[in-house]
Image 1 (cartoon, rainbow, N blue to C red):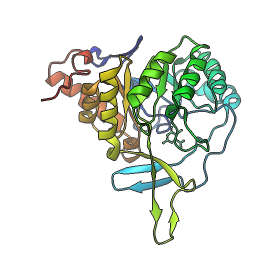
Image 2 (cartoon, rainbow, N blue to C red):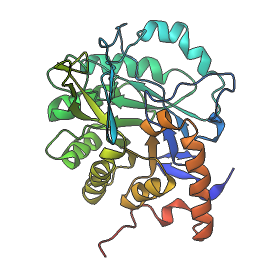
Image 3 (tube, helix red, strand yellow):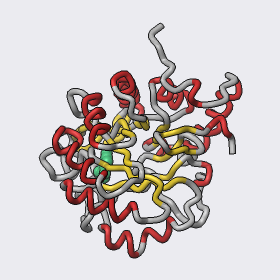
Amino acid sequence: MNSRMFTRVGSLTLKNPIMPASGTFDYHAQPWGPVDVSRLGALVPKSITLYPQPGNPPSRLAETPSGLINSIGIPSEGLEAFLQKTVHQYAHVPTALVVSIAGYSPEEYAILTRACAQIPQTTAIELNLSCPNLKTHVMPAQDPSLLRDSIQAARTVTDKPLWAKLSPNVTSIADMARIAQEAGANAVVAINTLRAMAINVQKQQAILGHFTGGLSGPAILPIALATVWDIAQTTAIPIIGCGGIQTAEDVLMFLMAGASAVQIGTATFRHPSTMMQVLDELHDYLTEHHITALDQIIGIAKPT
Ligand code: RRO
């Protein structure tokens, strides 16, 4: 355990700032593959919904030159099956467990939050308010009153930390972060994917079965970074940065813009060991620069 890697997200202390983005990394109780979960700052599984749903029709992925468009649509076994079966695999999860939930109404956020907060291993709950791939007209993260109502509904049923995952597809994400904070969120996750589309011109068809999806990967890093910066300039809410991170240098940019932790997603699909490599590189950077605590660099970026 290395204390210079500790980070605080509100009242929560994580052993380091590196965790997977929801939906990009699955956990197996048996050690498997190139990721040692005990080294992660937290684990964030795929969002679950209240009722079972199949997800979106294929194709669900479209590659672009510098990013990936997904339209998965949250295939979910539903809350009941999650509590009956799946949750047991997290019984001995060796790091902080952040359960991600997605509701279709404030009431659903309340039901999901109440149930998931009662799971003893749950350290925090990520409210996914910004999935771009559902058949709803508007996502909570795009509608100030729905955002407020959804977070308040969750807030009334638990004292555990609530992280609100925001969308970049808004006029002012800083305004949305302020609303999230006022509604009782303990942190915001910035950002979910950007609405996007790809077309196969030979087939003269949209590639994705759902037509549009969400863009992630290196293409969105500068956009995500600017959202973190905007939020950090205007609110005091802790920020978990997310968007296109591939290296420790990318992580450092997010920390310096004001994030307390980060999530890594698309890069894991290309190189499954990315999170491990980033941890090693981040540690080396901190040592080389005689940084003994992340607080010394969080939010440090100033105009030159
Ligand atoms: O499942 C998805 O299609 C999905 C989700 Br829940 C999300 O939050 N963000 C995204 O890009 N895809």
